[in-house]
Length: 513
Image (tube, rainbow, N blue to C red; front, side, top):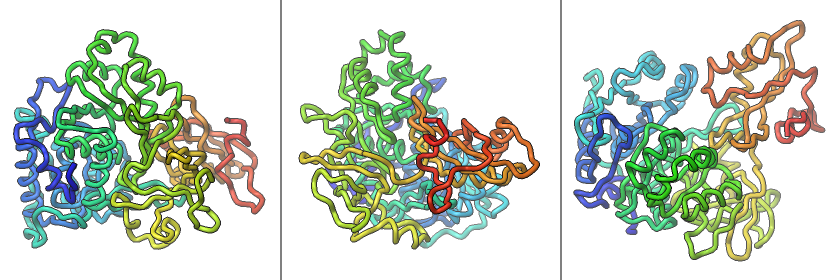
């Protein structure tokens, strides 16, 4: 695969008549979009943005439902501006925070969608551009309805180049304020190429995307890696285990990528879909974003008669860092494989030195897909980078053959089936309730999700509140996946030796592990 420097290069890979984007499950069915049509639409979208005063370096928030329009909007907007996809499930307060933090120049929403993001943008004076789907045309086709029309055309228009920012995503942290991760055109194109090389993607491949497209996993591992190989990606409306086998029959994909909870849900319905399994053309299944239990890996391989490739990724690396190799090379269950893009090292947490093979330490990376630093966050950058290495916050070890095994997480982030949740964000919402005097949110084990959200609460003196009342309170302010599934009412929250509240190990102390 040739070296790609920007989205324009990537879009030029596929043959004119080759399928780029599909839309399984659409009624009535739509014809797929070809690479020639995708390239033409990218030019139209960039021209439309430029007319609205938006050019290279300007940030465009995107709040769209999962599906082909979201995939195409990401690709075409990123060709000439900076994309910032946001979770459509966010509440008004969350949109208010993210749109303010991003300093977005514009917001793209689907015509007729009453998302609270629209009202927030209008209050903040952010241009709202409506995406009008072309349901009579090829899958993913749309036009942008211009904004107010009083913006002067930008002088910084045209297609973006290698060092221009392409994508900004927020990553949850242990502090109250999520960090903004900027990824350049070069970063995301490098990662797309790395994934394509790991999976040996060719123009004959067909990816069935079931991942949300406001996350790095779906955007880069499914959409961008496919298009970078001149291959097709068929974009579903979002994961639905009840419809997965219908989509598989319609698309006949050669691969898909997902988080372990999705794989488990698919497995649970496999036996009643024997005909689909018999016709399957899958040559591989990819898993990432949280650890895949070896038992699930074995069941997937037996059920689908193809190898399961577990990979390791994070937002700051434009997703992929390591991946198990394709057969006949060795795949190790419970291991995230070999370096697959950036260089990987194991660093001493105390000295900052790179440790020898077999030693346990912090996983660090450096390479063309790695962000150069968080936006407007010098303290986080000082902590995250040491001698040119990015510190992942994860703990692991490399064996003599270069296989990486994760041994723990240094961060306190809750990883709920691949959804990353900042405990401090949940703390702050709960502390707004008049009955809550003290709270600490933490991860508790979950048999399917890996982790779920729990919180220990000390009520204010003389106050009363029920678990249901507090959960409803959080649910009005934060997305559903952030709402604690377990609330414990305590007289006092256990503290560490220095008197600080400690999240790590709290589930065990409170009998939830």
